[in-house]
Length: 372
Image (cartoon, rainbow, N blue to C red; front, top):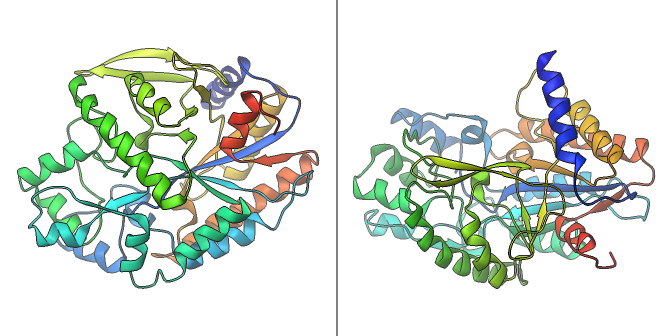
């Protein structure tokens, strides 16, 4: 009971301030597309045999999206239409680069090397046609990529692990994966723009510039939105993001911004808030993680959060992750996630016939005064 009360208070606080609209807008912001985390069932078994065991459901199921994953997802998204005749859409916060496992192996894992996403798809059996589906989804604007970083890993932490020949890291890399690595120090090995010493931010500027250029090369256009891997970045990076085309930033309503050496400052944000660079903040005010086992119905929970957003005349920005819709390890896992997504979409269109599905960039432009 206390947990529900806290959750309701938190939802109200997220929606109380900021940009408003009487339009019932729903955005799905879904992280991690394009990222290689788990290679296969065989890789999982080989890593477990070496003592590298899954630490979460991401370590068990989060694989590079397959043709079957995307085909099944697109069927669900196009099964509903909004008040303007438009299908539901995923804003796919994506990574244009991955670990080049083959080159790193050839160099005896001396240092981090990356490759671009189309190369990753081309190298892997069972992924034929995936990149074509990506492009079809983009053309139909039901699957629109935005910037989630260059890669979903902390380059410094990976290179440090390689220098000390960390057994778990080497085991994962030899199995073309980057998962199940237990790191007892801060930050997380997957948080690309997090740090311990504030000076580490200096390297992030170059990674952002290179990553956004790679994003354009891979996806054919500049990114407008940014959400950092692991949800953490210093505001010192916003200048570089703005100079390279980022207009909209996903950020928590109550952000603990790291200032280095384990010291944090609290930053209160709200929908439509502008930062010093003039960038607009988007607040994810609903969550949908249907394959994360919890003692409640995810569809009901998310519908309640959407209703709360609409009550405050806010768009509903639904946070989710690719792992919910992956079937490469277990097809039943994908079926469960997509069945829940279908229930959610059907109920949204039934409860709110005037709903409008948008992508995060479209919402950002609307909030900035564009005629969307």
